[in-house]
Length: 539
Image 1 (cartoon, rainbow, N blue to C red):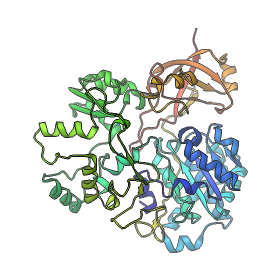
Image 2 (image 1 turned 180 degrees about the horizontal axis):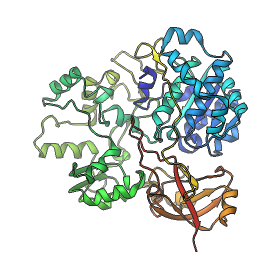
Image 3 (image 1 turned 90 degrees about the vertical axis):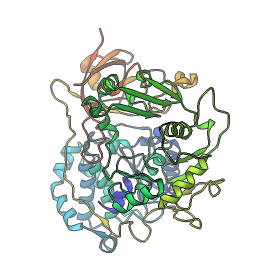
Image 4 (image 1 turned 90 degrees about the horizontal axis):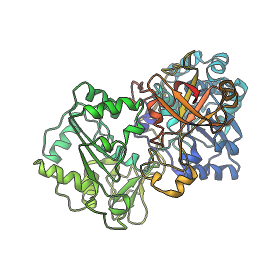
């Protein structure tokens, strides 16, 4: 995999948030930036005010469209066709960065050949977008001195999400928009410390800093440090856990800060697994919907009750400081885990503070090697930061790619796993509200936020609503092959014809009981952004 794409295994931005505001052109694809990432949305608007150009590619007419020079409303799941179509146009018009490609990339010829599939007619058919608009976007992106590409889960949550990510990398390399300020490919993480969790080993195939479990030298290093024998076999992904519970292969589940009953695709499948598991332990700050299935609930401290670090989407490791004492019997996550480990007879869990844990992590993790609490007391550092004298890294791949050369990836078009048919004629895509966070375990406990958005709504295009005899405020049933939920309809042009949109914040309307758990074969991410549904007016 390309050095550039390999970075995306961590979901890390190649560049920094502040750089976005200085970009000459921004392509925001599969990201409702102002809603899900308001600070980054501010930087996009700043770039516009400074004369930058903005291309928004999203099936829905999101708020960012108000600032856009070009708006591309392509069919859900057609991102590869759109991006590869843009690249074919760039090559046909001679707008590629030939020097960059020749000096810093490889496998270009195979990639170029794969573009033959993406004729103007093919791209227009698959995306539903006029090819002249796609041509205009391609030229705008390619001709700018510094083009920045932003994406979020609208790109990754597909059965071909890995291909989508590779397509964004191909586009950046084709135009030389890598390894310099205000460029790059910038995945926007969905939660505040997803990056830090991945960095420090919360993935099944790597130790800290993306050091591969299957590498004998890496295995030896961690065995020596921890004084135990370690497996060289990667574990299973989050999405595969519930299948293995139902198959009887997993007997105990220990869940920390997660609420899959609302967040996981095909959520009824998750509930079935939770009812079967022999022992289910939940560690959280509130009794979530998932915690109600637990045999044991361990009360964790919130961010304001503990010391630690968060690593944000631009790879910046920042301090979190205790502001109030932990309530009741709650403890920091690391303290709970260490106490359990010690009671089970494990060695090496005798840490005195969160700072001690960071010191151990730095000693074993090259990209964190120079990071300590002393160094991030006032301002965070961006990894890679390999030693105590290193200032941190503002943007990646300066000079050369981390793997030596960036590798172009040949791609072909693959449709979503589930498409509309006579029985289920509409597409459901999921989104987030500005007023609630993820499964709303925290945000729905805030009365003011509930005033702003207190219940789920089904956004539906006026043409679809008219066919179904539905008006705004009507109660409707939304049904897929996996489940059925009820909510109020909201008739709006924000959703394109043939597509409805819902959030997954409300337990009373568990949207993810509808979504498809079909997985991307590489990333094992489910296709929550596209599934076939029908909508019916209630009574």
